[in-house]
Image (cartoon, rainbow, N blue to C red; front, side, top):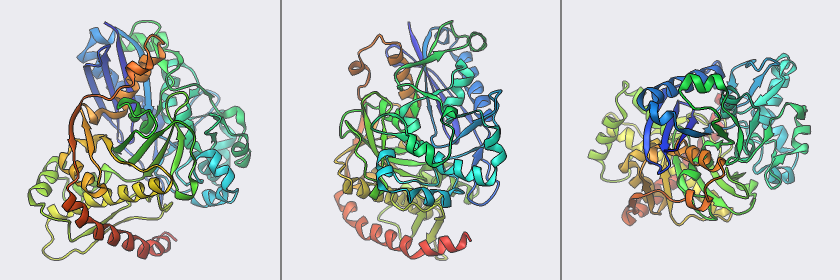
Length: 492
């Protein structure tokens, strides 16, 4: 039996998933990652820690299912976006990678915005501090010696590819998030590359996410019990690969992604830029497919933060407490902007706020308000997509947050749309990566692979709660507007 391996390089963990040709899970594993915050607005990870975590996860897979591991024919890759891996001439990382939630390049992003709306439309969104291009400008000004030593530039999942295959390559969906990529042409943008003064020779070649990008090196195959000749697919950015996993590839198919960060994603048949609404209009992980996305910096990480603030209580315990006491929208308001915010605010300075505390506030109410805060952020994203011509009538939900039916019900009611919960929804991008691995072999009809997985449940919005949440969403928006100047002032 032929098997396929998906590797998802997230921010908090690496996830690996092994499935057979019927998409039945044969083994899965996870290895944690940590984030370093070396200064204000800074967020970094060591690329070598990514590869070490991949090795831990694959060792677990090999130990759990050695026979299935030996039948792997293809590997798919998915990864967190927007972090630059700067390599020297020996393919060694020169410095830690500045992550998607690193806000240090805000001034450089503002400078790139001034290049005009035409370039923003070509690249899919105005320049934001999260993206690679502003970070490269920041490095040129603050660490010129780093760029002087740089021989090549990769994205996070592509550093894993380099270890697996020795190949320097990326795919259109991950390249889309660099602010260096022409979305309609699906190629590096000479205009953007010139704007940041980057040598184009540093950029990797681009292959489709469902196309072969290389073969696993013999020593790596022996290390993990793989057979010779295993193909590694181009892969993709984590959100787009999550869409592949649930069949969100045709025009208008939508989903909520609820992992460390959060997204509202709508598949598209063409590049449809809407930079004025801070909607991210990107290439999909498949040929001739694009997407529109409201990208939120803060998702399930907000709940993890509440768990830490309240004495490292377990997340299942917190969710159970909040569900048990829930009867109406919370009296508290939580701005969940622990790492700034992208859509619709473009505000790297924004931070978390709990408004309305009293002596009687219980932990469960704080948890509920945090869940609502993320849901309200998704409502902001929904409004931005609608303004950009991509209204959402229904959606799937994927990512670790999708494990909670309580949170899913709350989000459905806030957004006023039904949400489909899938079998294995928490596996998200790792499962989508196995599908890209399968397609890279060229033996399957994509239409037979890119199907919606079994729907476990459709969570309908509660019309009474949808109405009750409208004034709370309005208050949430007023609170942010009132505090935005204070966020910027506090960062000085």
